[in-house]
Image 1: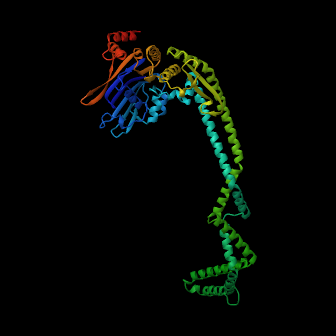
Image 2: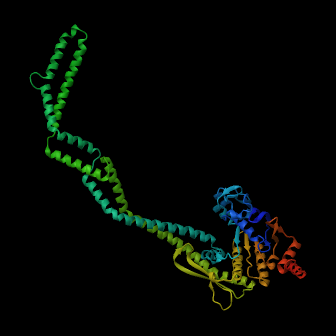
Length: 551
């Protein structure tokens, strides 16, 4: 419930503070006095965007603060979800500085407008003059029926199921699209895989092949050079190895005569042994060196094949080629398994659709069952508002496909006069008729919701006399269960108020200011009398006003 509204530097309001009570709060005043400006200020703390035009003094910031009692509305989880400190009295503040920059706070914690709107929308329903789009709109007509039918929990369940179904359907469509696009490439991928399979690459073979190719291409030179060297080392009467052996023997004979010769003998002996090993290894290399032209061509062809694949795929090693082969094989396997994946997704979509369909059927059943009760209740209320011949038909059509509303399309058809066929609500032109219908619907919805505060801006447009008196009675009844704030020009409605605020303006020193005054009983009589007869009010108007209030 809204306890108070503090406004500073907004439009033509320099400073004002309003206190609201439970029950029916009435706001009256002459046209242009600033009544609707109050609602503009209220809209700021409900999350509406603002601009520099709201500043009364362009050099100062605009400040609007609302205090709400929220203890009984179970909002703790909402505060927890947004990391806000919960208190049973919530203070909402909006500030707009001289540059037009806006800030919003809940209990002194900065919040964005989305969070501000989400939280305050649970506390205040605002209906402004000519704002009948709420009952014209198809989505809101569904919401009205579901609220009255008690479908809120079931509808939340359905919406979650519908979202899961649509998300799965999108994933299925995307998978099918990927498969269709992949089929254009799968043949080429298979060709590349077959090419790799034919080549049968082995890690490390490129280095080995390149070394073998070098040996094959220089086999004759290798054998010739080794032959010359081994001939000098091993063959003939005077070989290097024989000379070394002879040197070891000769030095051995004289080593006993000089202590420095023995180490040299050992070194010479080791050299002789090493030369013998080198000679043998050279002979082995010469024996292993292949001079086969056939093998040379074979190695060249293999290396050319590897180079061709490397150039084709833009890499420089066999290992990189093997990695590409693995990736191609994985891609091909994915395409090969796509049908199975799509079948799995299709099963998921079908299952989710069946769940959503079942819940939609339950919703539809409850909607159909509630229609007659809603129509009769609205017709009864309209009868109280001198529209006894009015008819509201709620037409529910079943759809073949699931929508965010379920399997129903709902349309309100309305006729205000006997003998006239009901037509779509959006084609109904009379403001007075729509005001009465809107009040009837909101009165019925209010009985089914926990919404603390209802705000009506001139909902009595187009009505007067007895009808206005009955509307005041309905608003007063609403006030027994909810806080109701009504801006009105109707004395009959104003007389029903539990609290009465007067908005007036004064011009001083070429400046216009709006003021708000809470009226006592005598003040209410005078104000309502002015609404009946003008200012100053006549004696009969004063008596009439007193009678209206007392009745």
